[in-house]
Length: 445
Length: 165
View: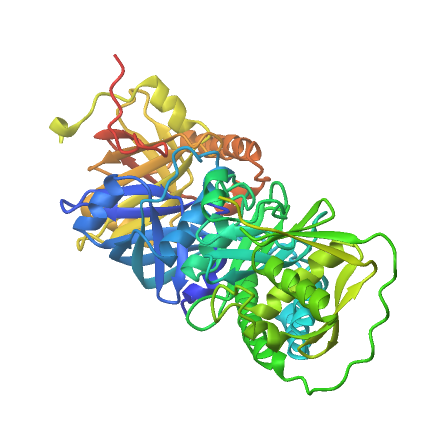
């Protein structure tokens, strides 16, 4: 029985070049290397179109082509009989192939000349194994499905959003051996993604931002498609793609640096599905080449689907706290006050002289501090914040809970004697180690 | 066919294709469906007017039948470490017996290709395995090159190689 295309996916990761034969209308064969054969689904592949050449001329005149692929691990060889259907020059397939090609180009020192013009889509008419010697497959890490099972069970047991994020990132290390990862959520109003949790970096980067459509993370979110790059490249380096001009235009968070490996050799960005648009992106990286294969991508796509459902469920349930009087908060110690400055123009907040956060999270904190100063309150609920017109949430769909997690973590990282503590589902307390001195800095023209 | 014949291959082209290059062979059926197979090596005639390429019969059934039917053959020669690639085409490909000199060139190709691949991290016996070089004796196909094309990846790929002055 002929193997299915699904069994050949290892051949499509760029480890060994693939080859294509075409034939002109006059019957002259042509043979050429092809930079990328991309697995689309069980019946289709797409080939990278980079140059107008003989292969292209032939393909447009005679849609039959034969492709030879080699599994880089076992050296198993296969021939694919193909029928050309169409070329796509935008959209998820194109962007996914463009990113992958950047990795292949860098790997083969071809960055200057490898630019994708289009994704040529073919129907696979037949898959034929080519007989010959093979070598035994190299030992791999944990089987993705075996790693997915315990982590999926743990995620299903989470009843709080922040626990969901922690269990996810811990589990990536424990079960998948992935030690560099970050979780970014989409700010629907501002067309940007903000980092809400991370693992494996000297600085967590919580609160850092990247514009939608920028870099591997921004493109994965914009196109709602997973993007996987197997080799180091500069084009899609996570932190280098946000140009100063763009950051200024989008009023982007630039004071908190993006986390990330300086030179990742493998990158995988998986959108977190959220109905109409992604909720965010799970980003994984590794200092080793070809760390994430098709099977890992499958597992992380399944994980992201569960994560998306979990985020939505726990966000809906975040206000379900039964009213119960919280225990009296401890008194605020006396001493030198912590000076908190709030700049109205962009909701940035400084603790003494040090920058903390801006935007929605800054607006939330300032509101809490104002209410505390004016009414002596220390206990708050998510629900009242969601309904508070003083907090400028970018849109109805914006995830207040995730903003609170981001704020809580930034405060904990700063360790300035001002933090938030959960007191129940959808409830939290403002904790203070010093008296406060609040300074409102009005917007100036 | 003499009108289609290009000048004898230059010494530089002969050195390149007989050097550490991987080979790909393509032909086509009567229905213009292309056939494709890895080659195991090549040898250029002393007068540089014809090229003999070697291919394992096992797995090349379609290609050999197509060559038998139309005599069309396209062969790509690519050096893995440099990506430099040339394509030769001919319209008179036919099966010829293997000679002792062919056997010697097969062994040499394997050694120099493995050495070149080792420069970019592929560990021997990669080539031996990939080309099933210990399999049955390969088939030899001889053709007269009618055109040589530059095929190194890049915008010039596909341009005819200018004959050397």
